[in-house]
Length: 216
Image 1: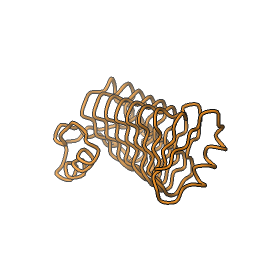
Image 2 (image 1 turned 90 degrees about the vertical axis):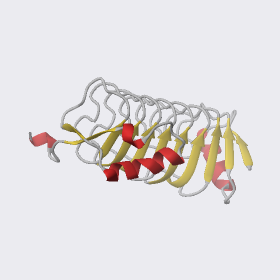
Image 3 (image 1 turned 30 degrees about the vertical axis):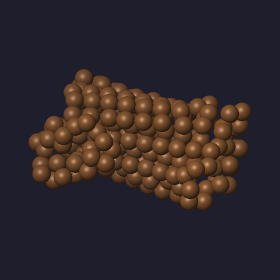
Image 4 (image 1 turned 45 degrees about the horizontal axis):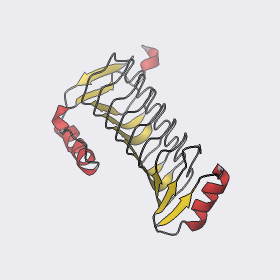
């Protein structure tokens, strides 16, 4: 495994080094907490950030697998189209905003506005999520193993939200439905693959009350 030390390096230099040595072998990056936009725009490769990462980690990801061994800042995986981003600790505001595809996993807690305008990604939060999570979701899945804050799934348009815990309040245009066999079949591999301590049957399902929430 190749190791890049980002200490005393700026974002452009660090990302340039990553692209230069990206040849099919995993790359480890350390001392990168000060960098915002780390490993953005990659379409391949496996990267392990040892320690914490800054804001916009993995933005515009289109095929790389990125793992952070501690925490991440705001806007993790912003506008991702494919690939995988895994945060072993907590993440800040706006995880998985505007994603078109791929998988984002935060093993700990995530901040407000997680999965806002999600357009097709699977976003899994192993702990609690802040307020306004799932706002304006258009497609994809948001899976929360812990609790949610205020306005959960606010103005949900399409897509499905699963939550094991409770919420402070639901947002506009939401409806709670019973889980189906298809939901349980969908949830099971997520939980198993990412070693989540939960059972599919424990989740509640939230969907849009109307596909045209702004006209009601």
